[in-house]
Length: 273
Image (cartoon, rainbow, N blue to C red; front, side, top):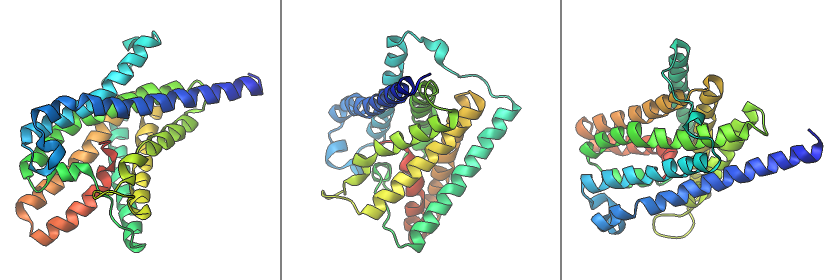
């Protein structure tokens, strides 16, 4: 391949990846519309919305990722044979465990650095939706396993990252996918709850978690060529966080609830709301 052809391959692949990423985020905004019609409280005061409405909203939110990925496969005539989904081998399950431990370790490191540098904590819509309701926390575990992890990993790993293999090495595709994934989250984390720009440090912490998490899950997919592996690791990682939060909300003192919520919130930056 000539230098010009290679550059065109890089450019085209990156543009396709960006369009798919942005389309997934935008599609999620449209697919959630029925939830707002069902319960306008989701717009006015999300924490006061019913658990049923919140569950519907979260489910529809991730539907946009499935739609964009599916339409791309149909449009490019790749069909569902492009989907790398199968039962993991013993080696695959070991990669799942490695991914979970790596994710936990990474979030701990980010939290530690943020504490040492006295960086502000980022605001996460998931925590706003959950409030202090333990039941909603349990429902979030269901959402993570059935909708969040499958939808996100399908679009960003099996569609975008795999598409980038045509122009980049596998390591390069993981890095490029993760950079794009982090960049498309800037609007979500760049705006403070009361309006205006969010603190730069808080945005940096959130984007670091998003980028690092994507690197971990992307590497799992690159190593195994099995979408089930990053889905399982991603879902288990967030489920562990929600399980800890549930136990704290049910049994811990109020002071510990606040501290745990801040810690859990960093890892929940991986939920693209």
